[in-house]
Length: 137
Image (cartoon, rainbow, N blue to C red; front, side, top):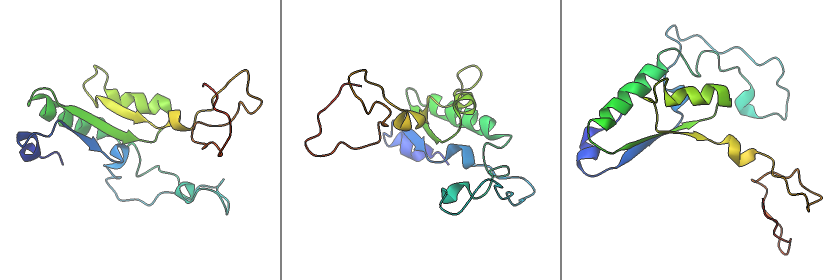
């Protein structure tokens, strides 16, 4: 997964996509369907991720990845993780021996608030229209 050759060639670290999905259920069971999903909902939520997301053993793999990077000096391990915040923070590791930076994409969709703005519930991901006044968030 992490290539020491890349590190020896000067790579300063790795960003690991879908870090929380690296391990699947050891019995290869199918995820159950999400009973609350309906047509028009996010297709990614059609199934529950019970057997494919955040599986036991993933934190040990993240620690091993971190140990490998640490053995080469100052390197960084970044993980792309779309999980509720209480599960995401576990990827730092109990003793901060996990990922240096688990991306928290929830900040991208958090509502912003501005007391002067009547549309204060907009999200940070919403682009401004041409000519729309800028507000400070």
